[in-house]
Length: 331
Ligand SMILES: [Zn+2]
Ligand SMILES: [Zn+2]
Image (cartoon, rainbow, N blue to C red; front, side, top):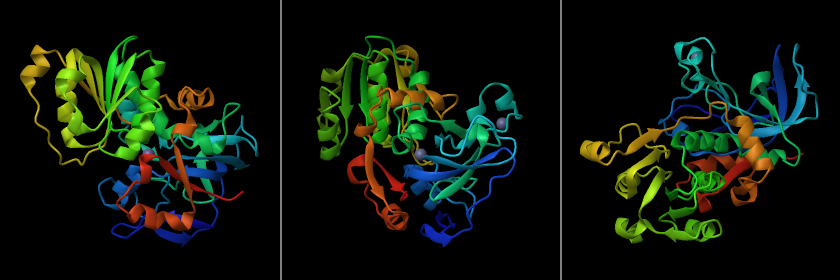
């Protein structure tokens, strides 16, 4: 089979691989679609650690193809999605219930072979059967959505709160829909890209370019989400949030980035600034949210790419439209 492989310092490589055999406790999945993520770019640019020689692709879904010894509850032909993150269950963080902060975290598509190949093998604990009404292509959104659900859990908006979401790519649009479902009553979306703003208008009553944003007329907003990854947006978030409000830092920035903030404001205005990493215990909820159209897959899914098109796509600097593009494998 052909697979998209990470070789440090090189563009993404398409290599010939043997289709993997499932070992004890493992499931082989025929991949239908694997989403492309900013993290894949970060890995190729050396900004996110991954194992050399690994098949990338951590947002995948497909059809069970074969079972290893000792796997029950799944059968060939079942449609499934893969939670890429697999904690060790033994370190201090895991035993304290913070499995997403595991110090020995394994991830499909980062430290173990992932979904940019027609077949992959995953431990049964990472394999989730799809709820009725959800296709594998739609379920390829479950991993990024599960991270967004964790983010909104950490942010914990209240019914009737007003919000700002900075950044209206796929992640921003998922967060907008989750905030709505949590009862946030008024959401202002902000993005510099006109095409993204136009698309977001179907989901939001107020959409602005950052240059048109005036903190005086935008407020008060109890919750603000930074989902753009732009350092300036975090500064904006801290100036937009209402006294007593909460800011979620969700956009991935380079580890070297520093942003000025006022400790006095955090104290006097009682601002809560929180982060959220990956998807602890949120994967099943993500599948449920997609199946019930709490988050509508049609608003997030972008183009299907062929595996051979992926290296050029990832080497390009543009993210056309900001939607979730993915590699689609033929039936
Ligand atoms: Zn991702
Ligand atoms: Zn652990």
